Length: 195
Image (cartoon, rainbow, N blue to C red; front, side, top):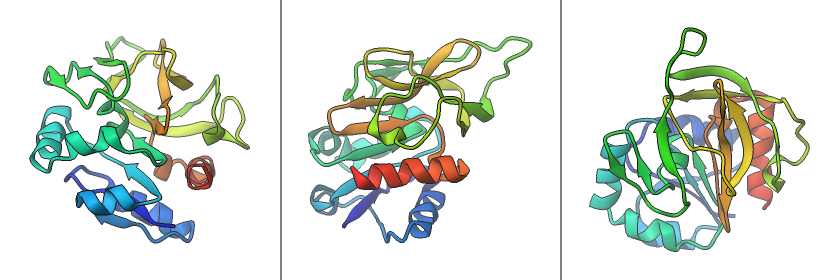
């Protein structure tokens, strides 16, 4: 099985590669369109800022390629947000694969921004979460979020609900860092590889 991990100079790529290695999978880190197209599965990780990420994707032509992919695709953290239509972060136009606008969390005395640390998942509704339970914990680091909508396949709360995971056709994405979420995250990555 060929796994392409998209290289667009986003952070957190190495920890995704290490997590896949622990599952016995050798993935290829690449920005090469042909390698991404022929992969059996594609993973789109990222930490960073939406506008600079989109600039890099456009410079490499990946903004045109990614929406055309038909194999199972997993976005992680920033890689989830970039699948939306627009982000409040830098007033940025995104890839337009899923019909959501990315919003900034509003801090309050009990809920700091960024939302950082372990939090629970609920309302799980996807094969991505096979074998997991409601209220399993995963690791988040983000200041922006996708609202809950028809595309939502798992929810988190900070303090109100937000999309912890989304899906549209072959495009799956998680807001949390599956690769840093212990056995729960490992199971999610394995479930993705099994799709």
